[in-house]
View 1 (cartoon, rainbow, N blue to C red):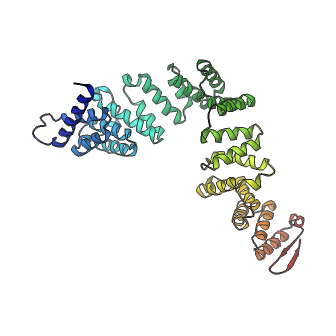
View 2: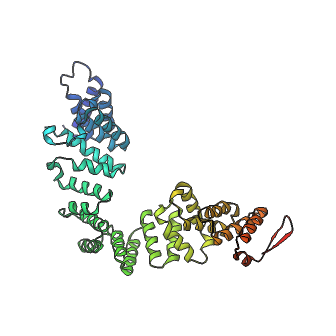
Length: 400
């Protein structure tokens, strides 16, 4: 019998047992779980999930839950897998203890902890993933593939030195790339550069490490090498959005602000920048004389960011938003921004003038007159630089 025909018969047999699994024909209680395992390895994850869930196999054994979680993860249902693992942990407590092979001779609890770690990585719960990896039995943890996974979780959790310790013994191209990242986080950028250059020698056509090399050069203050690395990467393939943000920030650092602004605006047409990029973005805009007329995306980004993360915005960022709105003649929107500046720094004559300009542009002349009175009563001299302003609706000239 040909292999394809045999596979079809086996799959049909699984379907029949799945259908009649509760009948007396099912002589072994382990049979449904063995079938579920077969289905998962055959790529029939949805059938395996249905069989396990319908028969409650995930509630009676770590092996059944592992099979379910792996099938859910393979079908992009990681959150559901995690919720099932958490429910099991609450009910059985196996994941609260070190999953030593002696605790489960068949290795099922170690397998469950491993899939729990991988699920945690998928949803970016890096500390939880690291905890699960660290509590695997020594024989599992010594495997190079698992050690690499744990190093990835350790690096993602922010422990560069810990990741370096785990990655040094692993002699693979991917491990060396991660090691270069770990060295940067560990404050050893010179070692990261050395690793990246070795990778270039091993694979002259490889480009995946060039962004890491650029970041390492940035960390060591080497502008020329940093720019060369980014240029080489951009010549080989399009930069990802995350790479574009870092590249633009590096361009600002290298005083290439006009080029940086172009990169930032390209990013903003696709996504909202992380708030960590705001400082470099503000520097780029304020350093390019004509940027106000063409940086609507920049202003829109900062407005959205300030609405989403108001507690993370400092005085300079709020001022940049207000001035950007003014350049676009969006005076009514600039008024509350300027008022916010005065709440933060009430004695700032610069921000008082900014609010005065915004009020006048928005046609809020009575409020502007009140502000002028406040400024004059406080002894401010800066308003006299404003010259003569006329309120069209009243025809009253105000001499400052």
